[in-house]
Image (cartoon, rainbow, N blue to C red; front, side):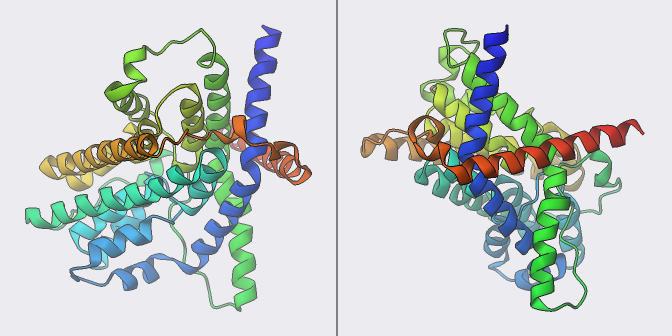
Length: 351
């Protein structure tokens, strides 16, 4: 038992060391985005009734560090301010599937191809869903009757508009937000993601395979990614370590891409609230766009890897910079904050 725990801890630590520095950079960028992209600015950029609003909504959603439940109140307020139904649906999809912090983490744990494919796929699935919804001629979205905060969201609900401040003060406020509010909200989910990823790397990386080969290779890999991703309540950032572990144990890059899209966007916790907004065939179009575009892009990614004879790069296993001092220092700093914030949340719930 002790050797297993040691291997688990070692795999988790290796993954954390390899990814912590770029994750810290991503969190910092996310904090700055929080300052400069609030609901009012997003609504102004999207406009009201423009033909390009679906594309604009997808582009704006890709870098924002909001998960599948925290995006809901933002989307609701955007729609109330006059943003079209199609643009709202587009924003609902692209935002949780990607984020500047998760993009940086994807690069640190996988490779440049998946790093580019992730936001590109998020943009395409959001655009397809938005234009499909716009073409359906459905009436505008109803107001959500029940508050989304009751779901126990993993990320901050929306970027609040800051008071008038100097640029330096706003930059400092963004960095403070990144390592207090944002990281506090993400901490328990990041801890879960890293621990599960380490467990997968140890257990599924040995002969103790619990997943059938039919759900890991070929077309079955895409289905396996959907089966794993749909029920998990996991945001774009915390899904990345698990995706890297799946890549290491034999899932194709395309199947991992499917998981990265489906997991954050379709978890059962947020779908109950999304269903209140979309209802009926709109919900079918929403889910179909996410799954179908993710699979198509996954197939395209696998084709690219195969055509150019590229081996997928799981950086914890292939790169040698993990022992560098700054990586270990970043991992220690990040781990301390994650543990402290996770303990704070657990103790707070008990009070």
